[in-house]
Amino acid sequence: MKNTAIETINDPTQVQIDLLRYPPGEANCLFEGEHTLFMSLATRPVHYLQAQDGKTHTGLYQRGEILITPANTPLFVRWEGEEHCLRIRLADEFMRNVARETVVGECDRITLKPEFQTRNPQLESISTMLLNELQQGSLSNRLYIDSLSNILAVNLLRQHATTRPHLPIYEGGLPSRQLRQILDYIDVHLDQEIKLADLAQLLDISQFHFSRLFKQSLGISPYQYLLQQRVECAKQLLKNTDRLITDIALACGFNSHSHLSKQFKQLTGMTPKAYRSS
Image (tube, rainbow, N blue to C red; front, side, top):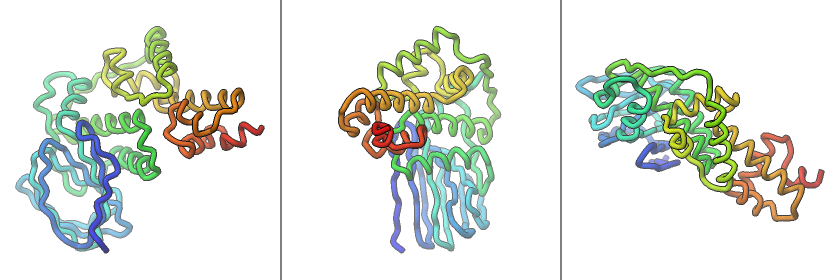
């Protein structure tokens, strides 16, 4: 088997994700300015020898088990079986921004702890959702990827930081005026790329807390709402115009005919073509 490193998304300011496959071997790694999470995807346990932060660990990694390496920490790894893992690199400045937005008290001193072969259901679930989204080729779902990256960063700070940070709790959802402001913005920019940071900045709150308050208000995430509105827009154009479905997809914020068809069928149970015919 050839060495392969399939990069699935690359945003150096926030998150970089690679799907790695390697035959037995060893490697020295140093990610400057990036906190790294490795999650095993191997179908059978793989024996590793790992060294970081003056500590050495050996063990059989099973699918879903995680290695965490803080930024600027040299890492040595040797594996004896066929390696298949997900590597997520979070920019240190992105992590610090998330900490500043979400943590009460001194946050610039917060760093991650090196972790060997750890189990964390939340991190595993978030990482798997990112992997699934990227394997499906839905890289245009920027709002969704931004949301997952922020949740991943908050969970790392909450559970794997050198000091246990205090995160404030916001309850009650968004005030009606602010909610209308967000919904109007989404409606106007439906055909454009909408980032989580854009929405949170309108209200001058953190991306993490914006997502929580939005869901408390409407019962769905910002990404789910955006998807619903784009599908509703497509339904109107399918029924009331004779425009090509590809043109309708782009006008409603989807990146292709196939992207629209996939999301449209998930929400309505039929393809755009079938909906137009009905």
